[in-house]
Length: 543
Image 1 (cartoon, rainbow, N blue to C red):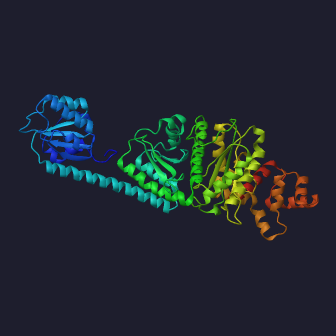
Image 2 (cartoon, rainbow, N blue to C red; image 1 turned 90 degrees about the horizontal axis):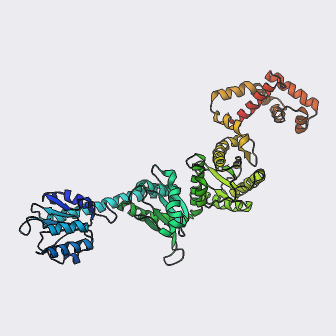
C-alpha cells in the first residue's frame, strides 16, 4: 500500500484473474511496487487523455497503431500521464509485442506486461477493484483502531504524551507536536530509538537550515485546529510525523488526521502546552540523568529546549511532591504547577530548565550559575520559589507535608547528570527526615543507604538492639529521654552545647545521660557507641 492508497502492480499480477493470463513482464520489472489506484480497459489511440494517473490499463492493442512511431507515442503519453502499468493481451492483434513498444516502455520507466492467454477484462477489473476497496477498508480499520486507543488514553487521563506515543508506536517513526510557530512542545518515538526523538527533531525541524529546507520528503504535517478558521489562532499546534525509520503508509497518514481532532479538543479544553513542554524537558533531564544522553551532546539539545546558560556551571535540583498530593490531571494540576513555578523561578535572574515527571511525582530542573559561591544562596531562593509555586497552584493539600527539595553539587554537564540522578534518589529518602527548606544531596548518602534497607528485618533488629530499652522506657516514663540523646548526638557529644540547646543545667543533663547509658548498657563517651547510636536514630526514621 502506497501513500495514495491502492495495491501494487505486483499484487495485481498475483490475483487469479491476471495470473490466469500467464503474465510476462517485458519492461521495468523493478517497478512492480508502483500503486494501482484503479483499473481501466480501452482500445482507443487517445486513451491517455481519459486517464488521471495510477491506473492499470488493460488492452488488446487495437489502439496502439501499426507504425513504430505511433506505438512509441502511445507509450510515452501513458507514461507522462503517470499510469501504474500497461497490460497487453496477445491475440489477433499481436502474437508478440513489438520491440519499439518494449524499448519505449523501458526508457519511460513504465511497467509493460503481456498476457499469453485471453482473460475476461471485466472479471479482472472487478477483482482488482475489490482488492483495492478491501485495502482501503483495512486502512480505515487500522486508523480507527489507533483513534480508539488514543481516545481511551485521553479518557483514562493519559494526556497528549500517551497519544503521541501511541501514534509513534503505530507508525514506527518519531511523532512531534509543535506550536503553530514551529517550536517543539513534545516528541515521542515508540520504537527502539526512543531517546533519540529530540536530536531527530533538532536535525530535521529545529535548526535554521532545516526550517529553510522544509520537512523531508514523505513527512506528514497535520494542523491541530484552534479557534475559528480564518483567525490568527485558527491553528493551535501542528502534528508532525517524520519518515526516519521507514516510509509513511496510508494508515499512518489517516490516523494522524483522525488523532489531530482529539488533540484539538484536549488542547482547547485543558491548555496543555506548558505541561507538554515541561514533560519534554523532564524526559530530556531524565535521559541525561540515566546516561541515555551523553554530557557532550547535552548542551546542544538543551539549547533546543531554550536552556542556554552563560557559563558551563550548572546546579541540579529535584523537587519531590508529597505522596498525599495524589494524581494530578493532565492539563490541570500539573499544567498549573508548571506555570506557577515558572513564574516564581523567573525572578531568580538565572537560566532555568524546568521539567516534570508526573509518574514519579518529581520536578527536576537545572539552574545556570555564574560561580560556585552562588550555590547556597541560589538554592535557598530556588527552594522558596518552588514551594511558593506549589502553593499557588494548589497541588499540595492543606495539612500535607511540604514538598522535598534536594540540591546536588554544582558542576558541568557530566556533574549535572550525576547530580540529577543522585538528587532524585535522595529525594525519596528525605520525606522521612525532619523538614528543611532544602536538602544537600551530599549529606543524604547515609540516609539514602538506610532508606534502601528500610524493608529489611536486619535494619529493624539493629534499631531495636541499639535503642529498644530507651524507647520502651519513654512509653511510660517522664520526661522522655530520646530527645536528650538525639540532641546530644546532634552536637557531637559536646555536653555544654547540648545543655544550652535543651535549656537544662549541666547536672540535670549529666543525670539524664547517665540514665540513658544505664538503660542501653553502653558508654556514651565511646566513639563507636556514638556512631552506632547515631546510625540507629537515622535508621529509625526509615525502618
